[in-house]
Image: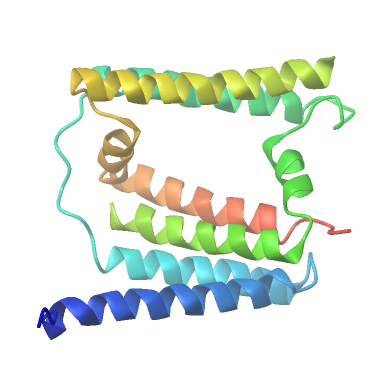
Length: 130
Length: 67
């Protein structure tokens, strides 16, 4: 009665399949030994594939943004970088946590790592599309 | 105490980002996504941001000694 045209249904099915494949891949990659060549290839390789995929489906050019309009965001990015750098150069780490030392605690389990890795890959696609 | 100060600084950055985004939407000024999209159209910035994103993934998911 209200069948969707095939052209609309296929991209949705493709997106679901891609999402499931990404989750399965992320689960596998999150279980690899840290600091290993295999983990490096699995993570960086998947990131490169995600960037390439996003780059093939670029969004239309955004409206022009002047430096003045972007200034508040640039200042905020510099402030965030300064906080991170100030923590990074100080010790002990427990007193001066960096973003990665905080995320390490959150990503202690394989399910959490797999979910975070899948999100990182999805954001890589989205970044490359812009 | 020092850890608390650092965490407060990170939280302040997050709160400022949310406030900036809300203010941008009210004034129809460019929000984070638009500024990011505009920055990504500048080739050297695009290369640096995408390379930084790859490095972040490697740093967070590979260079960590899981318990």
